[in-house]
Amino acid sequence: MAGKVGSVRVSAAPSEAARPAKPTLGSLLRSLRVRNSWTLKEMSVRSGIPISTLSKIEHDRLTLTYDRLLQLSERLNMRLSELFAEPEAVSAPERVTARRSIGTIEQALRVSTPNYDYFYLSPELRQKRMVPIITHVRARTLAEFGHLVRHSGEEWIYVIEGKVKVFTEFYDPVVLGPGESIYLDSNMGHAYILAEDCEGAIVIGACASGEPDQMQSLLEHHSPIGT
Image (cartoon, rainbow, N blue to C red; front, side):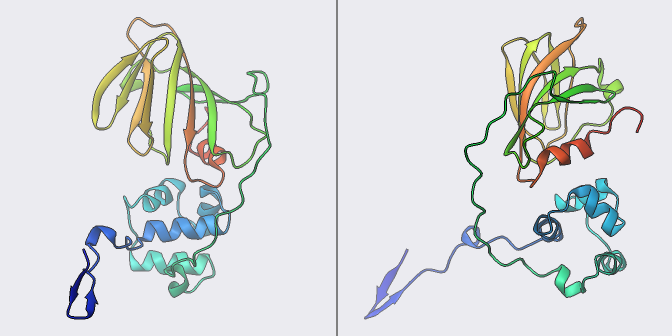
């Protein structure tokens, strides 16, 4: 709140909450990658750091030692000071308008993993703000599924057929049937498996994040069978 002392106007100092957040190693690396239009896989090849490690760094769940930072700057042909430089503010890119795509299961990009069969709809559209997916759930137990999945963004799924049991990192499991849906933070560990006594389940959903090419990021994250 502002007040007056004599003829001098005095303004209160901004609160801690109002001050911009300090950049982290993760946010700086992510900004560098986005500025260069690199996917996580491309960044991994250039830096020599595994994709899983880069993802953890970008989400501030892991940091690097000074020696690894020097190695990173050398691999990227950058000075260490450039690596930690905050990006200059740029205007938001003009939105792509007047585009459309008719999505069918026959034209979808299919990716099979031990836990799911994914059908990515409208794969010809690049830099989508959301990625529509039809998913056939395969895993029957959490032990069979393995570690919970985490990736950037948010997601929503709607059960079309069968029943699925949804496990999340911070909540009790929930069973969803046809006509029921769930919306969750994809950075939170999560897994969809078949509910007890269910032979198969099909869900439709959408993933959204700030990735410049989110579908490519999801394809890198969802390792196909045999890789």
